[in-house]
Length: 140
Image (tube, rainbow, N blue to C red; front, side, top):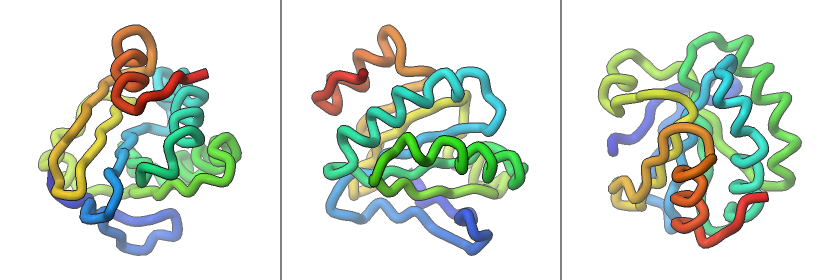
């Protein structure tokens, strides 16, 4: 998985480097996607339950800064004290390189850059079971 290059919430260039001691959870969203909004509570639970073992980064799949900033401001309180990084304004080349698909999309990337888990869609049914099994949790 290539390192993600974009901007942070302040518009400063940022790179998501996976070479940390913990795996990175990339959560791809759009600011207006129906399925993304349906998944907010489950994602917040995942963050609260596992943020001590994983590094979380929300990846904005739209370059509409005003919408994504408003969206993030609205959902951040649900994460509690956990820190979730944000990457937005990905270049078209970066979007092609990571084969960005539907939203929401959850990837767990090892420190070596290997994708350990890919879940496309909301955390319901098979997707929920895959998330709960991989992380060893029960989403509320």
